[in-house]
Each structure stands twice: as structure tokens, then as C-alpha cells.
Image (cartoon, rainbow, N blue to C red; front, side, top):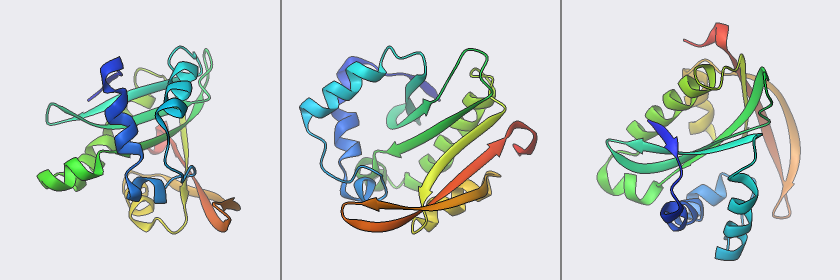
Length: 166
């Protein structure tokens, strides 16, 4: 299930985002400060082109899904996500939550958001997420190099259309 973010959840969201494995798989690799997170939230919370949602797994907040590039009547948007890796590993629910989050994000994109195309990007070295996206029907449509934290990394663009949604 996806739902709106409640203000009291912001510290947990930042903690999840700052988990070393989440940072290692992200385009922003440094530890995000409280002030930086507050500025980000102030920018995105009322932006009509963006939606930041909490993913609930088995009734508990367990991750964040964000959609960007939304426009009135728009047909496509980008998405990204991260999970509470530490908490979900502790409970043995990480894989189930990954699958549930992906399913919920796709349903939200093609349902309430009314999109026809959902796009994303993943580091080429992040094979588990690439496999997950392929499992849900995403096609790898492009690639490009990007410098992250002083290193050249390859990025893979993925795309899922409503027609190819399994």
C-alpha cells in the first residue's frame, strides 16, 4: 500500500535513505543531513510535479516511493524508491517488501496517476534491482555514463508501459 507521508515520519525516511546500502545504490551517495533533508522535503511536499509516498509492508511503514515529472494530463513520469533495509532485514521481510513496493508503485502509476509510461534509472552494477524491474516487465531502453562520488558509473534507463504491464 502507498499513502501520503506524515511529518513525524521524516526522521525515519532520512534514516532509511542514509543506510549505507541504500546510499551505495543511489545517485546521491553522501550522508544526507537533517537540514538537507528538511530543505528537500520543503521543496517536494507541495510540488504538483512530484509525489512522495510511504510504502507500507504488512501494516508498517517500510519504504519510500517518489514520482517526478508529473504534469496535468501527463502520460509519463519517473520513479524511484528505497526501503528500510535494516528493519526489513531484521524481520526477514526485505525481499517480500521489495516485490510488494514494486507492485504497489506500478499499480499507483497506472491507476491513480493515470500514466501510460513509467520510467526509472538504476546503476548498471545493481543487478538485483535490474532483475526485479525485468521481473515486472520493465525494458532496459538506454544507458549512459555518470560520475558519482568521483567514480565513473554506468546508468541503465528502464521503462514500463501500461500495455506491457503484466
